Image 1 (tube, rainbow, N blue to C red):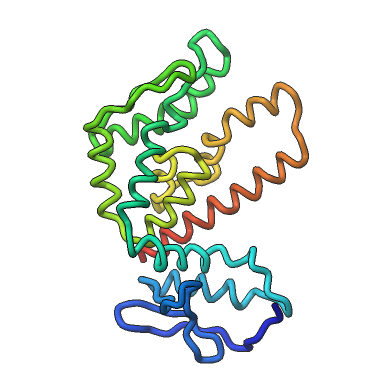
Image 2: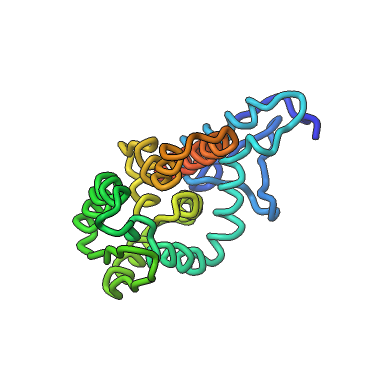
Length: 231
């Protein structure tokens, strides 16, 4: 699609903010007013539109797409998204380790254990660590506590968490990425630990490296979206 606008701006609307193109407010894919909760988020979304060239590249609208998902999907049924996120907690990647005598186990403990312990301390919960791939249920009390944590978040933060968590296959990492001072590169290293381990053993693959970089970019954009939504 060719670029159809000249001026990109932001405007207050009700209790939120909206991107405007040549003075007209944008709507979501579902036809709803695309009103976001903070000027910071609206400004970042406006930058996506301003950065487009003569031809619009849909792949460069990561923030816009997250806003659409938050408004059109999550806001209408946050319980469904929360249920999806809790399933990641039930099988969180950080909880599933190699056997203790395997070299990979030491690397997993080094990168993953501090993240799990920080989450346990923050929310007063306990995660079961599992050696091998046999599923072990997480404590009901842990899942109930995390459900309350998620219920306290806005539709916009939940939309971002859905991306963060699915990319990392870990709700613990997804929640950690929301912190204003989170080291996103380090969190992504934790999420990609097993793939990176295999690359160290057998050599790096160019396509795999490009895929890793694309997924990291999406991870960082989702974190940016959540932080900006919080204002």
